[in-house]
Length: 289
Image 1 (spheres, one colour):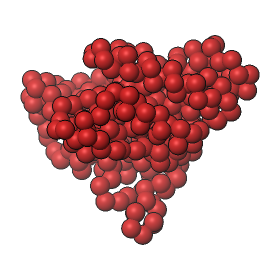
Image 2 (cartoon, rainbow, N blue to C red):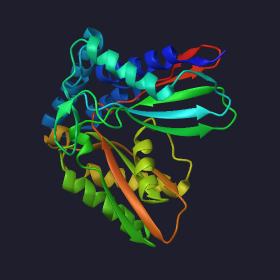
Image 3 (tube, helix red, strand yellow):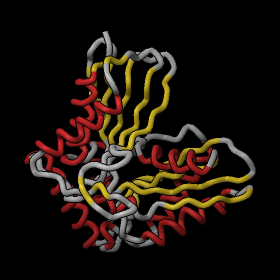
């Protein structure tokens, strides 16, 4: 047996739609916890409105936010996975079919950066990256659409042999510059090391980690805690209304590199769009998030 074209087409389209009509369970829990801790009355009420809006979108199958972003997929390909059909074509056709059928309809956010023409198709769309998983007989697919609010404020800088305070200060400078425009409370991903392109990839993948999970690197456990405390002391609060809840989590990935050290920072807005499934050789489909 094999993972079929229709399976990939169906699952990728379904993941994209689900990411637009609900927030992840860990994110809802984080918003509830933030609401219980929030000392600013306006910020607390804003968090409650967010939770109510997310719950209404899920029950009514409407969009949590009208900015549906652009489709972004992370594909973990098992080395024992077998395919029947073209994978990238299946993803493209799944998105096209979703655009034609989804209710409510999607706004045309796919933009040509050279002409600024907008639509639903474009070079490199959907954005898809591929990695390998040794020994696995499945593909693991994560969908995390990127919209304007959070996408605009990502940043990357390359340092020479930076110490930890230098890295943390750059993260804070990026957060302060972004202010409330990424629609807080946000999840912040940081990538340290590797190469220019790999640091950005690590930062984006860091936002996909479930809120509340522990970093396996002890140095980064402490760094995440320090940064989260500093960020929540900025006072931006939920949607810029003021308060203690500017970030739900700071997640950091790192990679060995050269003496030059890229540091990338990116944001996921309060919706924290993230859905995930596995497709197995035997035809099974497992929804994970």
